[in-house]
Structures are given as C-alpha cells and as structure tokens.
Image (cartoon, rainbow, N blue to C red; front, side, top):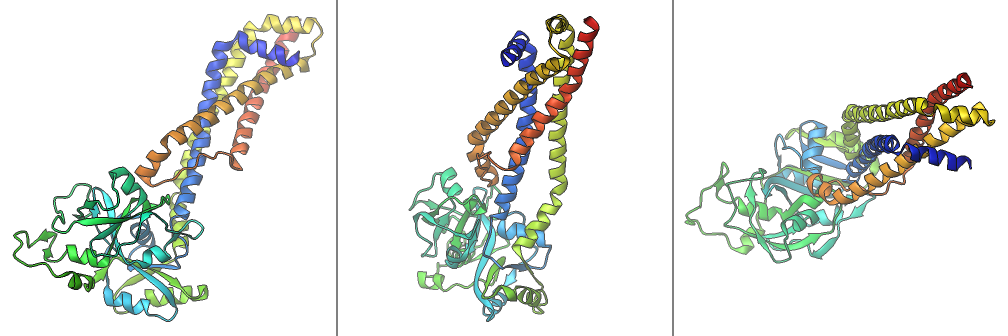
Amino acid sequence: MFFRLALKSLLSRKGSVILTILAISVSVFVMLGVEHIRQQTRENFSNTVSGVDLVVGARTGSLNLLLYSVFRIGNPTNNIQWHTYEKIASNPKVDWAVPMSLGDSHKGYRVLGTTTDYFKHFSYGAKRKLMFESGKPFDDVFDVVLGYEVAKRLNYQLGDRLVLAHGVAATSFSQHDDNPFQVSGILEPTGTPVDQTLHVSLQGIEAIHLNWQQGVNMNRAGRIPKPDPAALKALTPESITAFMLGLKSRMAVFRVQRDINNYRAEPLMAILPGVALSELWQMMSVLEDTLRFVSALVLLAALMGLASMLIASIRERQPEMTLLRVIGASPWYLVLLIELETLLISLSACVLGVLSLFAILNGFEEVLAASFGLRISTDLLTLTNPILLGLVVGSSLLVTAFAAMMAVLRSRAGR
C-alpha cells in the first residue's frame, strides 16, 4: 500500500519526474564515465610494457624517453651509436637486449625497426607475450609485421605490399617506393601502441635509406645499382633510437642504470618504465582532479534540480498531505513517503545512467582503440562504481529530507 501510494504519486507528476530522472541520469553517466575511463586509461598505460627492466635512449627527460620509445609519441633528441648498443648489450648482467629504430611511417602509423628478439621478449599486461593472429615474424629484409589496428584499419592481408614514408607525418611526399615491403605477419590485438605500429627489421630500415641524404633520395634516376640480397642482410645500422634491456637479476637494475647514465662515450639515459609511468600519472593528477570536480558539479546541479522539483510540488500536493494527516498519517509517514519517492527516482536514474554508459562504451570501443590505442572495458562491475552510485542515492535522500520537513510543517499548519 505504501509503495503503491508513492508510485501513483510519481505517476501523477510524470512530466517533472521524467525530467528529474534524466537530469540525475546524466550526472550518473558523467561521474561513472569519468571515473571508469580514468581507471581504464591508467590500466592501459600501466599494461603497455612489462618485463622490461630498463629502457635506454639518448639523454633527455625520462618522460620524453618513455613516450617516444614505448608509446610512439614525440621524437628523440638524438640517436645512439650502434657500437654503444653492442657494448651495453654484451654486459654480463644483461640477459637480453632489443634495439629500436624510429623515424619512418605509413599512412600516419609509426614504423619500428627492430630484431626478431622483439617478438620473443617484449611483454605487455601481466607479462603477456606478443602472439601472431596470422603469419610469422619478418625473415626477409623487406618483410613487415603489422599491428592489429594497422591491418584492420588499412585492410591489409598476408602477402600485401606497402610503401613506407620518410618521416612521421600523416602525409609525406618522400616515399620509399623503390623498396616496397610485403606483409609477413599480423599480430593479435594487445590494446597497446603495438597495435598501431608496423614492425620491420633493422636491415630493412637501412636498406630503404641507402643513397638518401637529408631526407631526399639521391638515386631517383636508378643510376646506382641495388645491392644483392646477401649484402642487404649484412647491413648494420650506424645508430638506433633506443633499446630495451632485460637483466639476469633484478638486484642489478640500479647498478646497470647508474653505469649507463654515467657512460662516457656518449650521453645516455636509462629509465625504469614503472617509475616513469608513475611520474606521468603524477603530472596528470591535476587533470584527473579537474574531471572529478566537473562531474561533482554536474551531480550537484542535478540534486538541486531534484530539490527544486520536490519543493515546487509541495504546494500542489498540500491538499494530499493535509488529507493524509486528517485520516491519521503521522508526520514520519509523510517524510518516509517523500523519501521513498526520491529513492525510486534516484534508483531509476542510476539504472538509466549505467545502461547509457554501457551502451556508449560498447558502441565506441573500437573507435577509442583505433583513435587513441585505448581498450576501454565495458565491465562496470568494479569496486568504485557501487560506492559512487550509493553516494548519488544517499545525496538524493539527504537533499529530499529538507523538502520533506517543509511538507510536514505545511501539513501541520493546514491541519
């Protein structure tokens, strides 16, 4: 009877009730969306690389080194001499080393020159290895392994040929069209920048830059004969962009890092990826707090709208309240009735907000992955979300208490 009375009361004012539900659902959508995307973004960044003890590059800021070597964002300040890489890689404390050479692109996607050890030792998430959806690692000088998103967006298949561009601009007029590459493999999706990267051999990078000076192909007329395949496979880079190290013992990390940072032959920097990621999130904490503040303001505006709706309805419901008091309803009965109406409104708004967020995340999951390399999960059953929903419901009931007390006082005056 009590629940039915509250429900009929809401239905009699369905216009204002629906608007209130929509307003609160928008605040729930924004608040949960900001928190969920924040957590998923942090998780994506944290899962980008694992199992790598040190990332080494030319001396620069630790964040800059992390961004261009791991996330393919920005450009290095300088390169590393190949003989320097070989000397550090031969250190008895080093278990494995993976060189990386950046600087070319294909239709806006970065090209990474490396060795086949990259597919053996690079890990992401909880030390998950790279797996091939089809094909195999590059074997020939002009083989290329595509990240999942590159193959999907550009509709490449095994055996297709493509041309790399000089530089990292989305549109380049310096094409390596005299040396096309053939797709030898396509990686499984990882939700990391690997998905948006083309992987070739270091020999392939050197081969396409033969006879190039200052970004210009000096052999456009074809007057210089191409080296034979055996000579191409024997090519050795003069320099690389960066390299990753895995050590035999975690106890040696700081000692090796110090030795690299004090390397006298050329200025180098070695960073711990986990520490650099922590610095990155500390810099982004201001943005996170701003987003939370905006979502809190949206929730506050919705709660004020709820309170305004209830207060405005008190006058038109005054005869109803007075009648209930006359037939014996206690003041607490009226308070609980209004609180129950608010509970129904807030729960309906929470359900609508959660369903809307789930639909949006599910619909734009591929767009976010393709545009930003972010894999946003549609699983909203986290520990934080029930707390936030409880906060919305609790705040609604607290705001309503003021309107309920006004209704009780007016009904007493009318009695």
